Image (cartoon, rainbow over all chains, first blue to last red; front, side, top):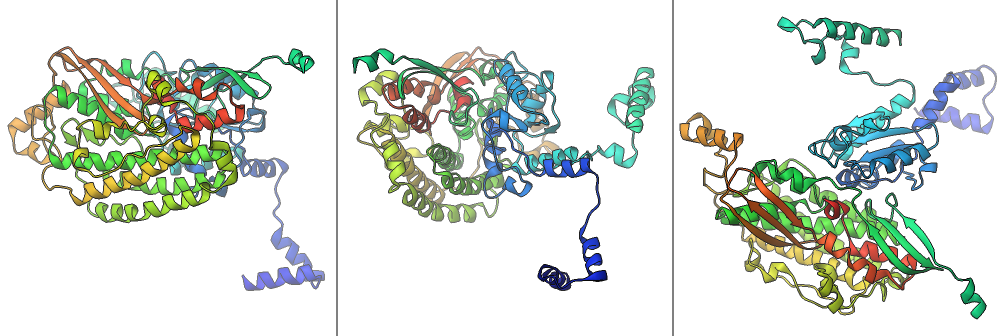
Length: 217
Length: 394
């Protein structure tokens, strides 16, 4: 560590020359392609929309996750924007009522590409406990969602975890589920519809089709 | 001058439902003449969740998590309003320890709610650091909630008959640490705001509504107390451990936004005192009533007592029945009178659960607070009104 610092100092003074200089540059240069660099830059400079719906807003990006203990600035997303035209991440924090859904869709449409959406909490992911006339049963019914954060409401840590998942997705390296990591395809609940736990004919077909997609991607 | 008047025209501006200063999804349609608010129409319903309707097809003990999510900053109060109403209908006496525990958690929740209010309102007025300081203390309260209940928000801690679990080991020490700190912290907030010229000139003399008008509108809570009416259900009614507590009701004089700020900040200190007294006087004994018809038997009894197993099964599958009748039970929430009306038809599910939410009623005063003032003062008044839209729309 110390020697690296000393070499950096020498470099700044212009003392490094020839082979030493070449080695210095080689150690510090990372070769990548432009897309990866762009993804890295984007994922670490997200401007979230300061948008709150209900309970989750207090635990999420508009409030608690921004404050000192959780400090989303560590991930470069503390610059909340009130206008959707300046934001590139919308966090649906709370229950989405039927009256609110068109407004959320309009906000999402007003955001400029590239844009992402996190659905925070059970309500905006699936309707949560409110399976009634007033609540949209999952915001995915009217807009695309990148990351779902479970909880009612999720802890701020969970929001940050979901946010880092989104960052990896933006970098073009999305976290797959545990099935992908451990090669456990075929153990899905929907794939075990038949007698004695074997997949039903339709489930097996759907599974093969899904697998095809994953493998080809 | 006449030429100028001819050229002035009313402009209608839409604020919300997505707007950082409306504290939720409130929509305001404001008629402006220059910078002066001529008329104002709040439009609500953007976070209407149908909670009251959902409560009608849940058994009584399953209603508790639903009502918590109405006013999501003061969840303990909703639980107390509902559980208290049901306890009074079935005439179930809760043990003294449960009363004191509930009082402690209610007052902690009041401090929490006022902290969220202070942080966000001061943020609207440009004092961004207040959000940081207030949320620092809020995290400590949430740590206490988490310690006792396992959840930061929406704890479902209160049960019909008491509380679900006793406070854990080490809770008391941590709570004492907090109540020793809190008055100092409140002093720090006041040091930051009380002599801040910008804050003073934006709050003093703005949003004044007379006491009589507030009473006409049915406004309660800190808004009414700031106008000089010492109405507080903690003193006026006999519920939980409040009759045994020694605390003051902070009252304002003018009824402007500055008084509203001062009343709430003083309330935080008073709540700290209540928590301290309740903790000192916390009686020993059971934390939940012993009536097996309404209260789940302890887990340990299930493997030894057949009767307990039957009661457990009965309570979990059908729930308990409440005889026909109706009851209204009101408590003092951080925003005013929070009432719960329960109509029972003799089955295991309530026929109607209705909440008188203070945010909803207080929002009526917003027009009186804002008409004739500048639009910047309107934003200040909205913050000081402290509506929680989840409670308004339910």
